[in-house]
Length: 30
Image (cartoon, rainbow, N blue to C red; front, side):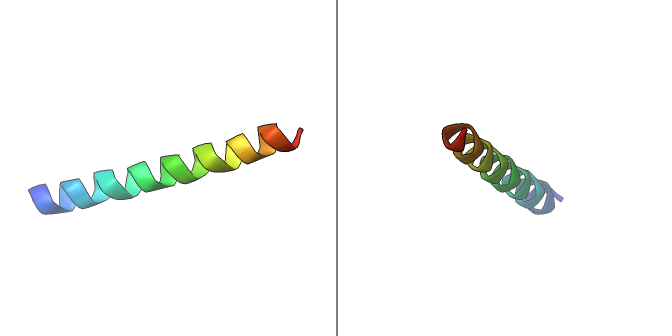
């Protein structure tokens, strides 16, 4: 259970990081 939880948390962190980097690029583009 802990492994699955950690994996989901890691995946969520990756998604958030991707969204933040994409948003940064959009802001820099503007």
